[in-house]
Amino acid sequence: MTEQPEIIFIDFVNYPNIVQDWVRNIHHRFPSTPIVVIVESSQSQLASDALSCGAVDYLLRPFSGTQLLTSVRNARFMLKNMKDMVAVSQASQKVLRLANRAAQTNNTTVLIQGESGTGKEKLAQFIHQMSARREKPFVAVNCAAIPENMLEAMLFGYTKGAYTGAVNSAAGKFELANGGTLLLDEISELPLELQGKLLRVLQEREVERLGSHSKVTLDVRVIASCNKDLRDLVSQGAFREDLYYRLDVLPLCGPALRQRMEDVIPLAQYFIRKYGEDRYYLSGSAREVLMSYNWPGNVRELENVIQRALVMARGMELQAEDLGLPLHQLCFDEAPGNRLQHTRKQAEFEYIYDLLQRFNGHRSRTAEALGMTTRALRYKLAAMRENGIDIDAIA
Image 1 (spheres, rainbow, N blue to C red):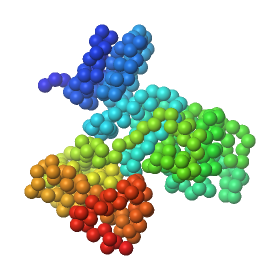
Image 2: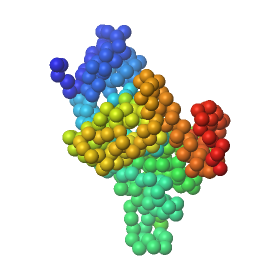
Image 3: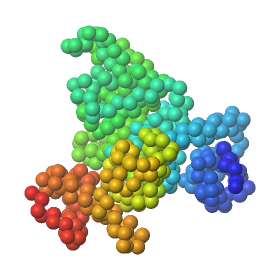
Image 4: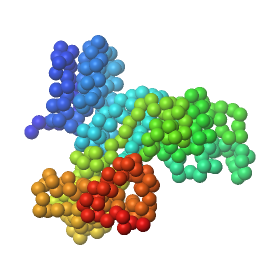
């Protein structure tokens, strides 16, 4: 059995035509090992190609000893931080590689978009840990969870007497994150007035507490995240275009769990170890149910399902019924490929049906919750009727 190397360096200076094939093959053989490629300074496109195929970093000849040590250090940090990042699928591995490259910049803002439950905060923490700011604070603010009248004071701080109830001075989240990273989660919920103030802070790199005329110089990397398409909000006038372009310097998109199904079982096993013990394991039927479900709630839903299964388990082997997922989606008399396609479709139909009931049959609100147009929803509803689902009975 071949020993797993810690880091793989590949020198392609004399073999520019085999970069992509070699990186793909080595990455397939050692998926958890960081790959660093070496090319000539005139071959920067090869470096880009290598990164798209699985490499985590590159060195351009001629490079210094300091650059080599930096590359080794970054690769080791990535290996260390990857232990808590389940990324088996190509989609999730690609996002991690891009996040690693983003981490190598110091002040550049990062925008992470993706559905709720895809792990956007965890990805932001990964960027922080992979960056030179890793020894400084990581501060997260959920813009949707703080009342609008308190959000400005929370972000920028305030002085004593700045408003009724301000009996003491307090630093805001920007100051608390100074030297480190500030995550602005659900940035789309930030009121328009505050969006203008945030833009000014990002441009000037300084903040002024409420009630104060003195400015505090900032050295903070800002990461913004949201589960909505900010471009759509800009076109609707709900988000400032200038702030969007200020945030969208290094965009990342966290894939939905249904787009990275290869990660489902490894993630389930990770959560079993996190909340249970190594002696718990998944039965074959439990694995099949997990792989047949559409995961509308993404990784957060999977985590909750595993926690529930550990509570309901009657032994060390987690059974399909312990998961609490809709078992009627499984059709064991079908061929495996057809069965998987059928059960995913049934899961999608069931999710749409539940949303329709929640919104009392209101099509436009259901389409908005699903992140699709009403026209696309009409096609889905037509397919559901063809499969015998009584949509029109929903008030």
